[in-house]
Image (tube, one colour):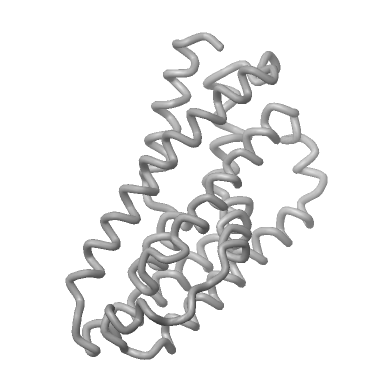
Length: 204
């Protein structure tokens, strides 16, 4: 792929991914409420959602998507429902110090990966970027297999940078809270934030 087009796509993706939205809100809220355990699996699912939307744009599925709105609505609401469930768990989580909480049972990676995937497949911000903005950045009709993998590599690199930054920032913020009262406040705030992200995904 032409270097100028690839650079333009990289810049646009970096700006879009860095701006807080339902996906970033859910990721940060999860790290604040649960720590970094499972954050990579969740973020990987989110990145996979971007790759799915890239494939949709390249294969010309924007028109098909308009005729299968029920399927996309189902994905959107499934992602929103999972975020609400996570928000409920955070709201009711015991106020344990971080050292004790770190020894609790870990969540399985696959459900977290699928949750991140569902969140991004139902995220209107990501949908608009790939199905509406991307064709104005590059000629998706001329994107072959090699160009797709080049774009996928850019997505992986950019999202690793952006999500890694947000995970690290949230983890450092979490480390400041040690008392049971502070952790209870964080759980309530992050639970509310995650519920807000669910509402944003479901209503846009």
